[in-house]
Length: 158
Length: 395
Image (cartoon, rainbow over all chains, first blue to last red):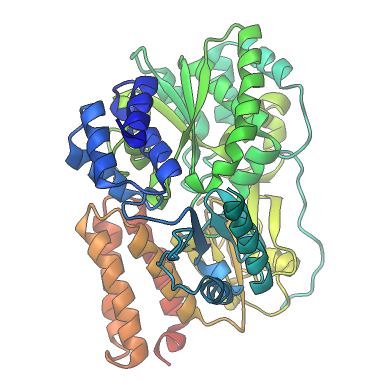
């Protein structure tokens, strides 16, 4: 059995075969793989005895449960009104310039994906973004470079 | 503009440092269920998530259900643009929220509770787990069989709608259900469920501690008490403020505006835009005694100054709605897309200005026919922006 199949099996053993536990299972797989591959969805369906179409249907509803490959660090820049007013576009430009990929794309080394997202709930400290689960607020283009550099360094160490 | 005479009262109840949670809970457990429900009903507390359903009544209705299994759910899926107060409450005073849940559980007879936390706030989980440990210890000491767990969302605004939230917890797409039946009868796993906003639960604790009478010393008739507001946009002092309900938008702007305020969006993208000329006659609170227009709100107050284009604001909201619409019912799914396409076409000159009136009719149709609050409330911001800033939509 490969790592993924084992993870799914362990998760189902831990949570039990219950539809209510589907979201936590999907979330844990995404946390590890950064997305839900077709094989992961099939494995989850098999183990939970939920039809694969239902697993896919549920996963594809949620914006944080990605069903296409993403980088190790998924960057989600808030695009809702206050962040848009306070310079979200400059932040996006700084990200694109530093990573040399466009919004929606993943860097060739599979390290970073740049995405936009709806209101993150940091309007009083706009503009804001998430890198995986970490929150960064009151961003400036210079800060963005520093933040990404630190993630790059962290990844290089491993 | 009127000259500023006095500052709005800053209230300090929700965030006030208090750690005698156990004592208050014990006191409330020692009282009869009827007494506690009466206290809640008398306080006049209404749901602080925005919809404003009377909290005491919600608890009472659920307590009357015969079903054995019941649930208490704290709705922390705070996704309305411009709202961030629930995060602050869960960060600074989570024990008050949990105490509110325990009070409710005791009355309705629930053994399980959940905090549905939006995925964007996942960083809060470790500190909430610590708090839950302490809370469960207190539950043991007070002999109440009630366990609370955290359920994480995964980035879907619609899951803040209570029935969509249940669907999500049940491992399904977050698509709202038909109502009735209401959650008080048929909620999570089709069992009677009390679902309250984070702030509502914290207020319940305050009411239990200080009494309904004290709660009603604040606010105005039909809109009693204080409310935590999330203030953002063109203001020198963005942040979280607890203020009395019933204030006029003018008083609010005098305190929080930058001197050049053109409009205030009350209640987030699904709320209303108040233009400058309406500041004095618009009040923050529920329908009732207030003269002029009453605007209920989940606490989102976004301020725009004269440098902002209201077209850009509306475009941003509609982009938000068309992405966050669950897609289940046609009026909302297609309506949101057509509204966005429509205002873009008018702006480009591909459609005449009169096309805006057609779009206004469409929002009215959505208000009448959409299945849940999302589709129904798109009309609020759309009509209040298009009617008050029509020229900005065209030129």
